[in-house]
Image (cartoon, rainbow, N blue to C red):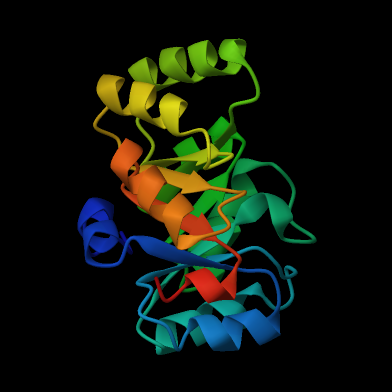
Length: 191
C-alpha cells in the first residue's frame, strides 16, 4: 500500500525550505516550523520508527536519509524495513538501487547527488534520462549555474542542499530552478 499522499512538487511549492535534522534537539525545533518535509539525518534501526512517528504526529512528511541510519545496510531490504516498520513517507539516498526500491514500494524516492566536477554533471544527466526519482537533491546547493542547467533538461523536482548559509543563498537556488532547498541550519527553516 502506497504511503504517498501528495505530489512532492506541491509540497515543495507550499513550503520550499526542507528542515534537515541531525539529532533530537533539532527534530523538536523542526516540527515547530512551517516546513512540510523533514529529512531525518540520524537514528538507528532501533529508534527510526519513533523518530518518524514524531515527525508524522506533527503533520509533517518524514523522509529518511537511509544511508545515515545505523544498522541498515545498502540493500533493498533496508527500504523494505523503512516501508514496513515506520511511518516514513520516503527515503533519500546516494544509492540508486535504494531509491528505485523506494519507488517500487510506494515511497518517495529522493536521489542525492554530489556535483563535484563536469563528469558528475554528465553522469546525472544520463541517469535522469533512464531513471525518474521523486526528486533529485543536488549538492552543494550553491552551484546555481549547474542547477539552472539541470532544470533545463528535466522536470523532476530539484532540491538544492548543502552549503546554503543565508536567505540570499536560498533565493538564488530557487531562482536558479530548484523547487526546494534542504538545510540543517535552523535559522533558515523560517525563511
